[in-house]
Length: 186
Image (spheres, rainbow, N blue to C red):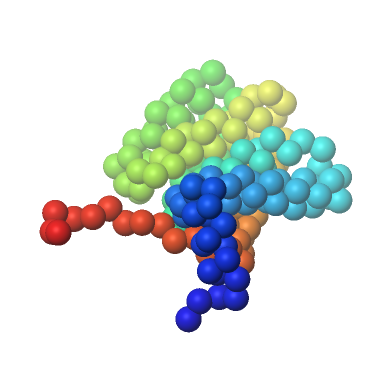
């Protein structure tokens, strides 16, 4: 059963030489625009005037295909957790000493690569560790650094949640068929 207006939409798309694949980019642009509006509005209501981490995370976790958006979100969340724990442990062990950041990042890469083994977004783990430790180093205080670092991690998670939520909602509102690559059989 086709949706009301589906034939007209198909005819209009054919008239302009568009296919469903052409519309994936349009839907992604709409997803990003909507998600940015939602995230920025919430941040402003909370008094947070720097949307950089939220918006970057939202874009990274957005995808026109909801299954891909969920997969990216899951991978990003796991690697953010690894980086957060590593950053906190290294701050507790060495404070803001010069050796902490390079050793923490190298260790985080090894844990993410060989223990967690989720290649998608695996760079997020050392990035998150750097955020946590960098905040401490910039403030000269491990305690203040932990608070600021965890705030950044919360921004990343929030941005990802908004991106995935908009992707899921848009996939229900605007169905886009994607073609699957053909196998070797005729």
